[in-house]
Image (cartoon, rainbow, N blue to C red; front, top):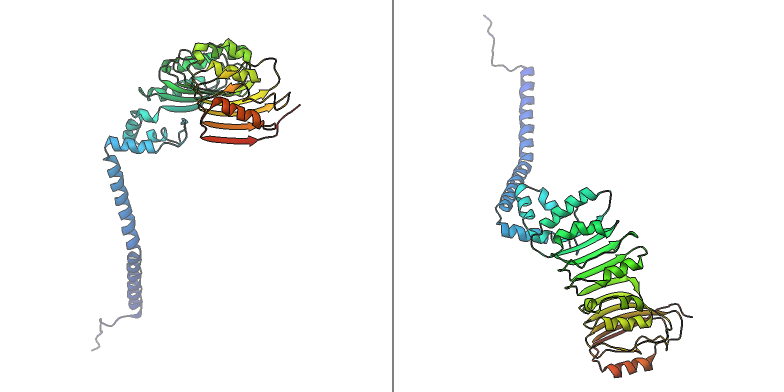
Length: 351
């Protein structure tokens, strides 16, 4: 009788087992290969969650300090969604609450004021400035329309604005009456178009009682305009920067502002019939740049009619021959103790 042995492996079965074993080995090798990566990814997730959790647990005081260091280094901040402080309000609910309740994030602002976007601008500006709480404000605004509308926008915050820069890009930029801004200490006016003289005179005839710094280097003043301004208004100024037309305007300005400690002035000089000498007892720093339109360097030397006994720093930029003898007479007359003296020569317009 013939019997069959069922324990004998057939070739097809053996091949299948080998292939299955090979597949298992490949899978095992794949798991071993990817296992460190999976572990690393899981660790990163755990670590990220831990960091996020740690940030969420930060006390409000520390988070507020971090927010302050997130601010751009610009002197005035822009309301842009990609920058702090606006960016900080979009991360999560808690960050938004902390950012909105932190006045230090909202006390400076620069923006362009344009007619087509007035309603959007009004909402943005009010929202920003309301978050500043009781902190003093420093604003830099580009004005594309008349001052009246802008003044109405700023009026609710007039008693908080310490520094105001106005860049006028329209001929209808004035008058810019700032007399009611009683807290204002520094005012900068930059007209980028021809500014009406009558609007300028009206704007500067009455200045805020606390104003100490006035910068208007892009504006040209003559003696007649200075005579129009109130002595009591300008007498409080301690820092001034502007441009004058005529040597008599220079000395008139010194008499108009007896409490000046710093003056930056650009002068266009020409011959005038009479220049009244001026003695200023408080001026410590003078930066003067001048060009001569008509006359000799001797006649148009700006130091020949002034006396500055308290002067400490002097920077002079000129386009004519330096009048050494007149300058030495100025120093002897003033008896000032200069700590810094700088001269620069530029090519100007001469007759």
